[in-house]
Image (cartoon, rainbow, N blue to C red; front, side):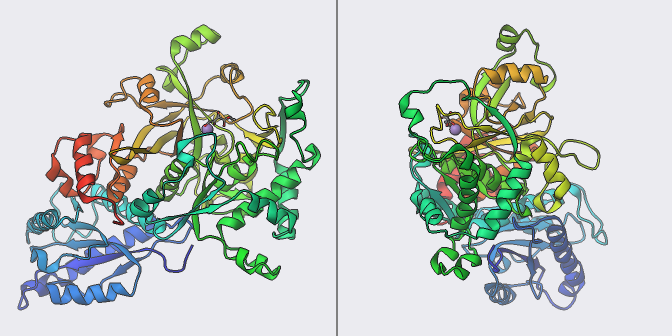
Length: 595
Ligand SMILES: C[C@H](O)[C@@H](O)[C@@H](O)C(=O)CO
Ligand SMILES: [Mn+2]
């Protein structure tokens, strides 16, 4: 993570009339600003675990003179967004943040002594007319002037706004590193530079898969770390099944394996270390004389093609993909990397959004099979119950599913949960790894061999699955499905798993039903825009909606309750009924963040 962390500027706005009014408001206004700063910094962290940083204006802003001085103060910082706070009527355009490049929010104190609401409304009118969509935060209940608390719904909106700002800021200027190219014709694996540049402010770095072979051959990796990783693998990667045993394979498969099976883990350990080094800097490589390789590629996310030009003759990349997305590796707890398998860049971005909003590890899945209650009963005699009673979607893909999804961890109330990496410890890591088995790669798919992680998310957790799609004539869109991982009786889960690729992870997903497009579980599967979806822990669809509105990515499918939706106030200028058209037209009007 670069030292110039993206920051949020806090702007205390005040009625500029000296001689009584301004003086009477100075303390209240600054107190609001300080409390907003503390709320944000005490609750949010960057992806690397550092607490987020807010810059407090060095004065209250009563007019353009003050506003200009604060702009200058902020120019010294990497300010991505600003939160203006006020408890009074102030002079609209004379005090607003009119920097075209910041994401803006305003929190108005719901008091009666000075009309804060009137200012916020006037500010929204100005922002709507000027084309700067701004997030309006205003509590429902009246507060007394001496009440410096932040009401819960106000705090929730401030934190949602701030999470979106810091997610946007952490992506700005960073790279998505595409190792390989198109994978089995999956269109998401054919990176769309324009999308990354204009909507995310990111660049795409292209690295051929042979770079991994070069670094193995020329030993461009830290051998000591390699030994450490291999020892960790041998200790914690439990051997699973070998689905290939006893099978006669045609010659094309037999002769496609160039690394002896007993050397696969050595090869895979190098693949994992080298892949990480290609994304991020590693000073050890400079010590080995490889200055250029030591610099990495300024990554925040990436992916590996694997299939087929690699996996058709070399050990697969499933371990690398799984460990990159997890909250730990052989060095212990460390930040998650949203890392896609099959080079699906759009699922990689979907994972990236999820990790930046939650700092929890993502699941990369084929949205593989819809099992209706009727089909399950016909195939197994079992009745689906509980959260699964309306049917389930089988989430499964080789590779890039964080091992944290094995469902091994619980919170202080003993509820299944997933932790940020900074809350993980060695015991947690052992619990997670104990629920993962490493099966021999299926030679029919992965001729070059290797290993695939397998776990069964055998706990019920709230989860949110998302997908970024690119639609001709529309541009990027986002789909969001909140729901739960479901616990199917192990025997039942195994019967269903036996019917498909049982050497890979399984998570049974039941979306919350009722919203348009969510009439049935089948509808969700039917409406989904791709073969892949990315999931994170928790019901955080509202945070994805806020982030999407900052990035001007319309949300085309979601099951988030209206009252939880938080978009810029000016989106209502495109129509107030919560429907996709409002979102579409606002996003189309405002266009991508990085024009
Ligand atoms: C191994 C198979 O080809 C899988 O890669 C395939 O089922 C997919 O995951 C397609 O997204
Ligand atoms: Mn897939």
